[in-house]
Amino acid sequence: MTDAIQTLSIAQYEQIEPVSVPVGEHMIGSFCGDENGPTLVVFGAVHGNEQSSIIAMRRILPRLSEIEAQLKGRVYLIAGNTRAINKNVRFIGADLNRHWTDEIVKRNAPDSKIKTNRTEDVEQTEILVILDQIVKTAQDEIYALDLHSTSAESAPFAMIGDTLRNREFAQKFPATILLGIEEQLDGTILEYVNNLGAVTLGFEAGQHTSKRSVDNQEALIWLALVNTEIVEKRDTTIDNYEEILETAMGRSRLIEVRHRHAIGPADEFKMELGYKNFEPIKKGDILATSRRGNVKAVESGLILMPLYQAQGEDGFFIGREISRFWLWVSQLLRRLKFGSLIRFLPGVRQHPVSSESLIVNTRIARIFPLQIFHLLGFRKIRWRDQELIISRRKHDTISPFKKR
Image (cartoon, rainbow, N blue to C red; front, side, top):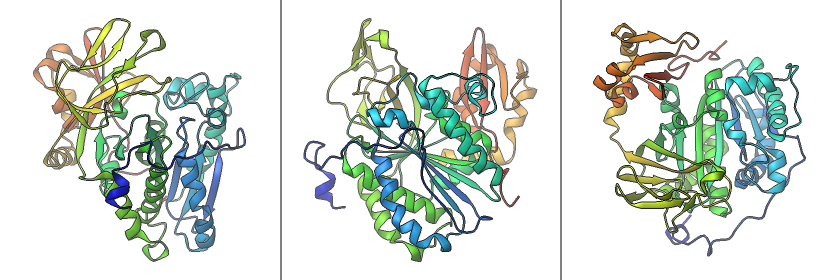
């Protein structure tokens, strides 16, 4: 991909056509070489209007078929919200990528006696059948990619839940990495799969309908196949795919998500025109309007994923670039298990249900800045009355699947 192509606007660059999939048939392709090797699961179009990933998956099917016998593991390419894909909308009744909470998954589990005909409930049950079989039969590490795109024009970037295993995997790619965005959200499919023990990586490939997004997603899948050692470098033109992502991304950065502006239909949210992903903003800048008036930036930083489409629950995010030095500090503290010492502080107690969560008295929370909790792996932070609930991901350093 040349610099000239990279600078083209959305209108100037060739656009993809909407795709269709058979309703309820989520498996785009499955391949098994060495069944005792690692597994790569790729999700696409969990939001039905983000269809470039389906095209990218279909592009690589012929080559994967040719080299299937040489694969050092298993590969599953999975379409997300099939019914929304065929209508080219983000979702039908509910966002499938906010549907993976413990409560909803339990309700929609294949063996559940509670059955509904709501679209995303049915979609989730269908995907759970596939995931359950993949997890049960895994003999080695499971890796999962979730491919997305944005309504605004954007350079591609990766997103990770904060485990050391996720970080190690993400840093094998030439990618700008967003840390903490999943922690701002509840019920993402990657959070669910991560909590099962998989190593996960989210990827925003660019604008929804741009063919550049297809190129970026195809490149990412091939790099993931090599980085998981399922495919040997000699079996693909790995240098070309690295060049595609490096050219598309520009300078790789590490960005921490600090704020999410959540919205609902009643807000009448409308993003101000012209904002691009990673554009610098200042505290007080007018970013959008709603029925309550102007929506201003609560802090200076970089605007992330401004919403320029009708459906969605995230108006925008605000992040800031951080030094990789802090990743090193965090890794050191977590390997030394400093996080386990927090529970011995006054005003801190174990959550009665979650083994990975603590309840912190607000007096303690004021003494310890949130960044301290972040360094120790506690990134999901929720206020409840006068208490702060902090949670960290399961399987931070040890895989439940590795060489079973």
